[in-house]
Every structure is written in structure tokens, then in C-alpha cells.
Length: 396
Image (cartoon, rainbow, N blue to C red; front, side, top):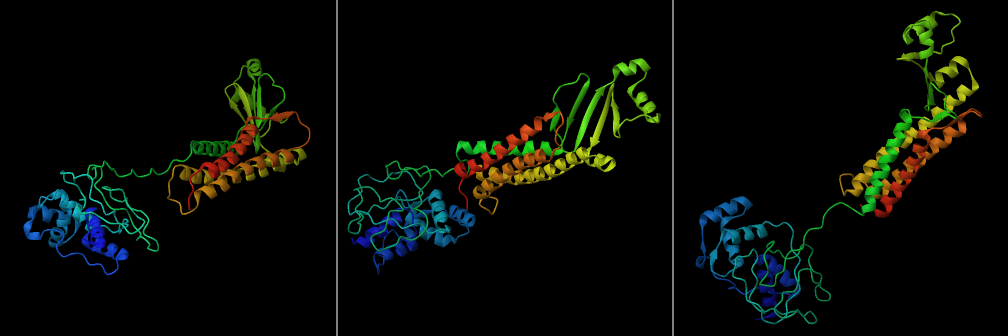
């Protein structure tokens, strides 16, 4: 038997159709034509026509061509085309990706007999030869995807098909499991947590929060400022007891008093009188320099922090998609997640700096909780971007 014929028989044994086997063999042995009688004619095979019709309809192939090709998939060589052999044939016939032609086999007989159980792809019983310098161990088929002889490029595609979970010729070869998608380095999940913290802290700072608080606590008075205004709650229980009135009644009497200097926006909450001030409105009404400085600091701090929220939202989407391996975005999620995360952190830090530098001089107020949370958000945003760059999933 010629080397070309042995190589052809090896491809047939690994599950290639005759047309594919001929095509790939001719790449290594120019002018090769397979021997006419490689398997028994169709008339010598037993086959259930009902199985043929069912499989042909399922895979959309010609019943006649299915039976003719299935001769090469008679795994146990019993000349009975079982339904599993017909299905294996149909799957190969409808494959849209051409398999890679394995390198030729060594000219040595198979060491182990063929397994008797039906398999999706039969092994060729003929000895196989390899071109010079490409010897395979006796009795073992050369693995799919092996480099072709010098100067000959192997055709692109996939390795020779084999029935999932079935041992090959007693050698116990199993198909390699598919690589799991998504899920990078564990530190990638830390990046997700960091950017979520940045987004939460920045949003909280824009919507309200405690930015300035009094240096010393005063009994019965709760006071703090947000970026855009001030909140003061005063317990007036003792005064109400003197007048034997409720807070709402006291507030109504005070509004009727022309000498009352209660600020606009005063309300009641039980026995507490609540005053809520807006720096911008009070600046326009009073033209007070300190109030206008507070209004300007809050305005520019809010704008910058709002940009940080927008960048944090984009960064959260990009980083989550990258770390969890979701390829739904047509961008490099690792690269732009890094950029957006760092941008969100830097903008959050700048918002605190701008707000602080524009505050009026003096005053007896200290930085509140949201100042420190926003600074923390700046750090976590930058950390999220860097972790995504270093530990994220590379994407195109």
C-alpha cells in the first residue's frame, strides 16, 4: 500500500468524509487518487430506511448520499449501519468548518485492536506512513493539529472529530473540555467592588450628605451643610411648654409677629423647628459674601462630582462587563474600563478640592462624613481602573 493511500485511510478512520480525505491527502501527495474499493458497496450493508429518513430529515441531507457516506462510519465493521453511525455521518456531512488534516501516520501496524462498541468516528485498520522526519509512535494515531511536513501548510479548521466521551481504540483519549468564558483574576472582582463604592459615594455626595458640621456639639441643636444648603434642627420643647402651644402654633404666631426674624424655609417636626437654607437663594436675597462663597463652592463642587458620577456609571458598566467576560460591548472594555475608572476617581477628588478651596475663610465648621466618603470614592475609583488594567480580561 502506498504512503498516500495509508494517509487517506487514516483520515477516513478519524471521521473525515471521502471528499475531505482526498482533498487533504492531495496536499501532501500530489496527484493522489484513492483506491476504488476502500469499503464494501452500499448493497452489502443492512440499514433501516426509517432511520435513514429520520436522520436525513433532521440534518437536511440526501438519504442516498447519507447511506453512501455512512459506509465509512461503520465503526464495528459489521456492515450494519446503525442510527448512531448515520447521525455521526450526517453531522460530518453538515459540518461547515473543514477539519485540519493531521500529519501522516508512521508505517507501523496498530498496536491495539479496534473497540467493538459503536463509535461516532471509526479508526482505520490500515498501517500508516509518515513523510520523512514525522514518525508517530507505533499503534498510535498522530494527534490532530500536528505540524505539516516542511513547506506544506496544514489547512485551517478544527481537529478531527471524535465522539464525545467515547474512548478511541482502547487508548482512553477523551476530548478536551471547552475553556470557561469570563471570570478573570480574583482581584478583578475587587475592581468591581471598588467602582461600585465610587459610584455610591459620589451619588450620595451630589444628592445631599453631610459636608460641614459644627466643631462643638450644642445640646438640642443638630446642624450640617450639604453642597448646596444648610440644615438646622432645634429642639424648642421648653419654649413650647412656656406658651402651652405646639410647634406649628408657635411658628404661626412668629410669622404674624413683624419683629420675628425666622428665616425662610422654617418648618416643624414634632417639637423640633427645622430650618433649611439654600445658599444660592440666600446669596441673591442677602448679598452676603460668605453665603455667596458657600453657594459658589457648592455649585462647582456639585458639577465636578456630577461628572464623577457619570464617569463612575460608565466605568461600572465597562468593568463589570470585562471582569465577568460579557462581550456585548463593541469596545475594549479593559482599556476603557481602566480609563473611566481612573477618571471617576480623579473627578471625585477634584470635586472635594474645588469645594474646599472656594469655601469662605474662617468659620467654626469641620469636614463632615461625606467629605471623607467622597475622598474614599476617589481612591477606590482609581484602584478599580488600575486593577481592571492589570487583572481584567484582555478584550479587543
